[in-house]
Each structure stands twice: as structure tokens, then as C-alpha cells.
Image 1 (tube, rainbow, N blue to C red):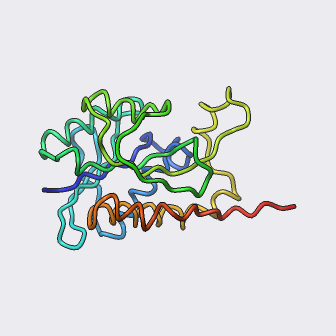
Image 2: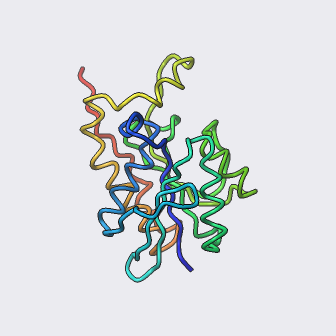
Length: 197
């Protein structure tokens, strides 16, 4: 049975390099690596099919806005009859520092509208998540603006390694299951940002 790997973000040029779109960015890295073109346009998503070491995978980026991501996920999951245990969602996480990657299945949404939409559409939260830290502003009232801003120059230095790490972690879940992936990819909090004294 194929795994369905979803990267979360907002469609369109305006949002493509913003913090909220780190799920799209990580999925693009994985798609390039696997030579899967995300050219199919249906189910409110851009998607493509391929394999990871002989395991069938479907990679998809919902083309609704973030808060409606669940519509695309439900349609894809229903059409391709993907078991919830084979669903992996890559998304940004304000509660983790930039460079941190955490893997888990189930749990709350911590106010993430994309996750909330997926849970509401699927009626379950028991899917695997690849959580990518984007940090958060000191001023909580700035959160909405913060997630829709591009990464700062010094943050962009971090991105290639972070995105590759997320892509590899997602592939590991497909190959060897979530627990093995946690052991291999979660223990390392990639802290690339060197603070000047």
C-alpha cells in the first residue's frame, strides 16, 4: 500500500519562500531526490507518484490555502485508499527553534490551521508528522505576520541542510517505520545558528 506524504504550505508566488511554506520546500527536496514530478493537478493538490527503494509513494502539496489543507488530504487519502498509518505530513512548527526536527504520530495541532483542517477532515489525528522548527517572534501578536514572512538571510543558511534532513526523515518513515526514524532523525537538534556573543 502506498504511503502518502503531504507537504503543507500556501500556493502562489507570494508565499513560496515564507516560513509557513517550509513543508512545501521539504517535499520539493524529496521530490527532486526521488525524481518525482509534482505535475498532476487534481484533488485540490499538485501531486506525483514514485517509489522509495521499491515502496510506492505519493507526494502531494495541497493547493487550497493552509487552513483548508484537509480537503485535499481527504480527497487523496480516500481516492488512493491510503491507510492513516501510511500518511505523513511535513509542516512548520512555531514551538520548535529553527533547525529542530521532531517526528511523532498523533497529538494536538498547537494552533496550526493546516493540521487542524486535516484532523477535522479525516476525523483522526493519528497520522505521522515531520515537524520543522521555524522559531517564533517574542511578540505573540506578530505570529500571523511572522509565519507569512520570508526566512531572514541568516536563517536561509540553515535551510538546505534542514530541508534535506526532513526529506531523509520522511523517507526513513516509509522504509523502516516511525520509531526507527525517530531514533535516527529526532535525536539530533540541528542547531546551525551560531549566536554572536
